[in-house]
Image (tube, rainbow, N blue to C red; front, side):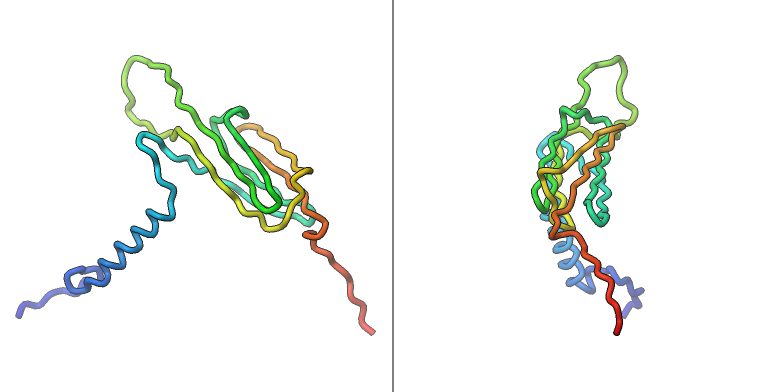
Length: 149
């Protein structure tokens, strides 16, 4: 009998690892958004934080114009939708490297507290979208100082 070095990912010895790897791959394929033929997905990066009175969302949307962004807000979610269009200007020569993603994007962000959609304010400056969402009165943290007897 030949001595064989133990490899923890040797799928011949442990076929269950191969099945597990396939299941994890399938799970990620189901979870991540799929692309249509020839279309790249863009997923804007966000910061979401809350103060005593507001929930604030900042989204990086470099290279986009206000006209290409659609924002809708409900009491508990923010929907970001838009498109980064590729410039169709043709120049002489060919690409050496092409890394900028173009295409449509859509992202839904759940909020940590209920907000008042009627009082939401947004500003888009230098490729950063900032949305300030005032919390509903019921959602604000109430603090009461307790006195001991």
